[in-house]
Image (cartoon, rainbow, N blue to C red; front, side):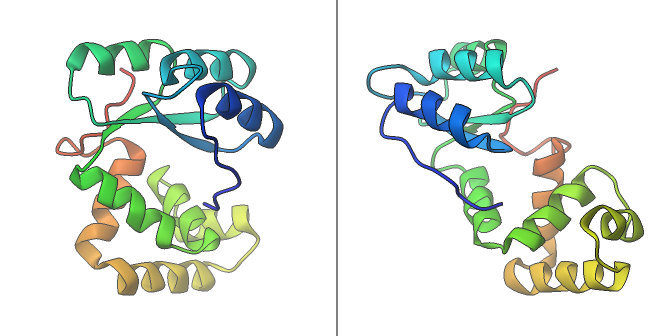
Length: 159
């Protein structure tokens, strides 16, 4: 994953997302001019396939449920282990991130290779590189978090 934009407020976030059409948005819940909840709702109306992960220091279950209700695909509490997982994910190269995300979807090395236009051997080299950077334990934790399968992961998925 490559960061393609950044916004200083909710209104700017909506405009940039609609212009840049990213795959994933990290949306702060508390912002100026337009809150993250309203921004998320507007983005999902126009781009329903974009994945939005709400980021907040609030641990209030009602707020989490409301963000999910308006369209957020996940919720990360700032200063949590998951926030450090996101930072680790962002440190990977775009190819490594793509391999990780496709593996989280359940694809084999061969399927990933076909989708990315590389050999399965190249896919395995990307996996080895990821593991060298972040450790084997964090590699599998990242896959589980991206796939929404880790029960200990604080990313709340839509049910």
